[in-house]
Structure formats: structure tokens, C-alpha cells
Length: 216
Image (cartoon, rainbow, N blue to C red; front, side, top):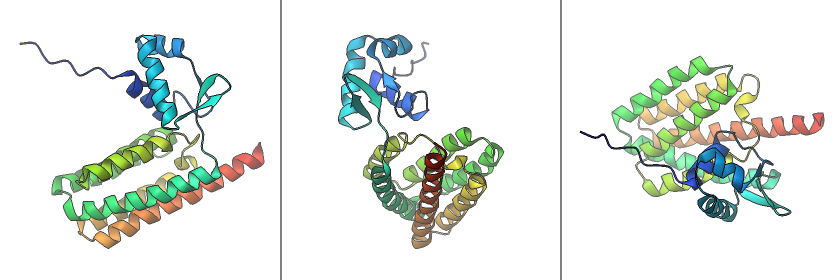
């Protein structure tokens, strides 16, 4: 019996994942021919994917070239404001709708992620996985779609706030408080815990950016 092959990813998804994983970072130039060779697809779907990403403001123009966009201070503040409210809502709905199994998985993720302390890149990937599970546990498909868009734009930040000294340990403690509130079905506490978590992450990122500018 033939096993079903997993569906092939389209050019848009492949480029998006490459940006999200840091293969292409803000300011990097994207060239059709190089992308087509890397992903083993023709240039036509690559061109269409690049146009779509430009329309979504994930790419920007630098002369005739397309580069991975970056966020200025105001854009970053706007993004965090939206993220804070949507993430808080996801936590509130998760406290209401999450299954016991989803809550168990969230708790296990925190324990597994402790082994990643000291590895900001791996911890950042684990952090996205944790937040995605909360989104799914909200059991609201429209909220999940909007949060996917927000997290897609988060990839346009050159560094992770988890690179700051001690931030990883603090973030995991904040994750534990969020899961505890969800497990207790305390919607307001879950909402507040996640909003506070995003606020601390934003402050940390602002400090990192200020330091980077001072050192440059």
C-alpha cells in the first residue's frame, strides 16, 4: 500500500519559513534565481511569492531589488500593541476552552524548554511553539489567523528579546504563570499574565535596540 506523500510546500511558504527561521534576515536581498535554485522551483512561482510578500510588507524595495523588510521604532511599538491585545485574548479564551490535554502539553513544553536556556535561537523557536499552542487552545480560528499574521511580522526583528541576559529564565517563569491561570480557568488572570509577559518582552527588546544603537 502506497503511503500518501506530504503535500509539497509552495514558494510563498518556503520563503516565509526561511525568513522566520533566520535564513534571510532584515536587510538581506532576495534574488529570484538564487531562491529558485535553493528551493528547486521555477522562477515564476518565486516571482509571484515575492510580489505577495511585498504586498504584505514583509519585503521592501531597495532600488530595483527586494530586501527583507525591517521594522522601525514606531512600527515595532504598533506591532507589540496589537500583539499584546490579541495574545491576551487568546489566553482568556484558552482559560475558557482549552482541553485538559492542551493544558498538559503547555506545562510539558515549559519543562522541556528549560533545557534550552543559554541557547537564545532554540529558545526563540520553542517560544513560538508555546505561544502557538495557546493560540490553538483558544479554539477560535479567526483569532489564530490574525495571530499568525502578527507572528509573521515578528520575524522582521533582527534579534530575539530572549538573547538578553537572564531573559530566558524569566520568560519561562512568566509562561508558567500563564499556564497556571489557564489551568485554573481564571480568564482575567490568564489575560493579564500574557499581556504582562508581552510587555516585559517589549521593554527588553527596546533596551537591546538602544544598546545596539549606542554600540554602533
